[in-house]
Length: 394
Image 1 (tube, rainbow, N blue to C red):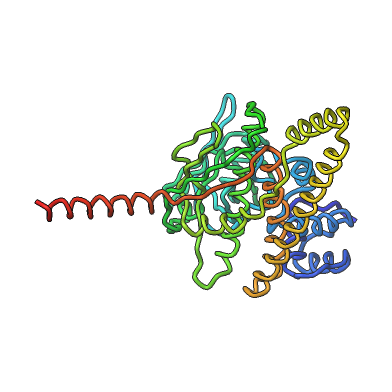
Image 2: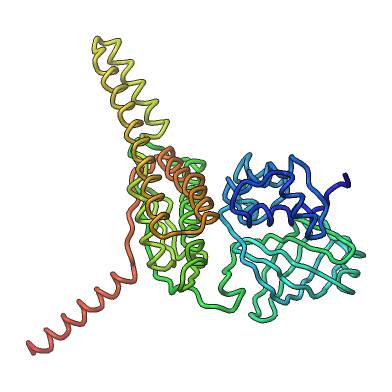
């Protein structure tokens, strides 16, 4: 059996995903052969199953998937399943840079998302790129011709065939798919999130950083669910990346963002499921105090505290189950496609529930949400009414 090429592996995943069920290796290879591709191995077929279970709607190689599972590195967002790609056919100018050389050629984007794109080069452009020999981590500037959007990127994958070269790039920062495609996204509002921290928690740099990063993952998980639903809705919609207006990391942590009202409402749906479990440092302090009480003759106190901790953990497990049940009911009522259902469930478990647990572990006990624009409108109305009343008195 001839070794499968990257293009064969990618085509096999599309076949496996389009089937909507668990295909056997023989079924995958039979359909690959009919489309002119080479057969893939059992390991590759098992990899397809893992990608679907993890919520991916696009193929990534086995080694990149292993990195994504081992951790969620901030600088490798294109390896995260929550960022789905949309099929496109957009012309681009690409500018590749190396230490002592650069190359500008044209290509076409076959798929793109918030975090990156897949670009195909053919003919003389492919020949020039082949001579340039692009490699992973090369810097490349993507210039979308129709929308005039330019995005700094890096190369994360290179696939060469006799007919073309396909480059996958990761954007240096989150980009708006709506802007890339010359479409409109939902109108944003200025919203304030207030993260209240337990008084027993500390504010060392690592803990503050964890709170901010966990909140980012929570928000992006919710946005991914909203955009997945937006693609399958009759009236398609898209929510772009949030923009920070101000940030205060003291206690409470205050984050003001520009996001659509619809995203604010969806985030608010998940916030009541924030686990009510004290941070590890707080539990340690409580245990130390309990030991002291024990030695002082109050053995009942430590038993009561241990019982309270177990009850808290049990309530958290029950709340997480309630969340899963509620999500399943919503998906069933919405009649979402099976592939989207799998992706949504994976995002809820991996990004949203995990982020809520991590926020709780970092000492966050409550997250408040306020629409600043609505407050400003109400204040403006009150001031106008007050001026009117003053004029009448005069």
